Length: 270
Image 1 (tube, rainbow, N blue to C red):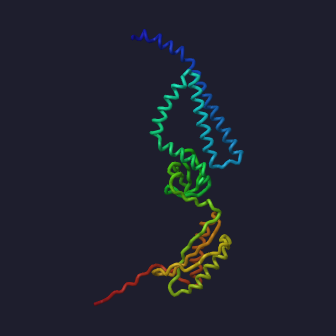
Image 2 (tube, rainbow, N blue to C red; image 1 turned 45 degrees about the vertical axis):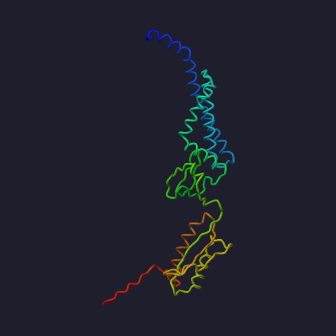
Image 3 (cartoon, helix red, strand yellow; image 1 turned 45 degrees about the horizontal axis):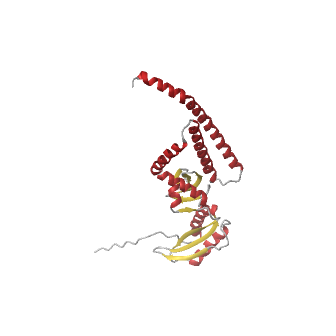
């Protein structure tokens, strides 16, 4: 077939499908603009309602994706493409894509599970996948965590939903544990009284349940006290650090020694 024979057929195709193609492109451009406007409107609606902050990004992303899928199908229909054939093609392509993107689909399923069962929410402090930080956002495929030193960690939802995770802020109170040591020969009762007095003076430490103080171990170079106190979750680390400093300063004033490992070396001369 020569070029002269081919040109009439090409022109026929252009005249037959050209207007439809141009119209489909225009509809697609306008449609994406409408989808964006609807997504923004839906986001404002969620912000105006008392919706869990964890659900907002997920719902907005889901609605945006659904609208885009509907738009593309509508555009293909206006071009005269048979949907039955298209569905068969999409089914085969979907199977292949699903196998190739099994990890991505797992992350999507994990995101749905997290938002349904809510093991954590935005603002919670969690430890998972080797990272500790505050949850900033929960998306369809991943969760954004901000660490204490201001690093942003992106954790895939698949592993996050199926592995162990510690949520430090689920309960309103937490128990603070300390181990304080005094030297052998120091007054145990006096040390217990000093620890009790410092705990009672700190208003952040709950009086009920009462602070637990007991000799827990006769170690190699110290007599160790185990101290347990309950505080509000937000006060956990401030109380922990403050008590360490108070014990160090007060034990010195009260004549109580904080021992450290020592070794006696004996030199024998023949």
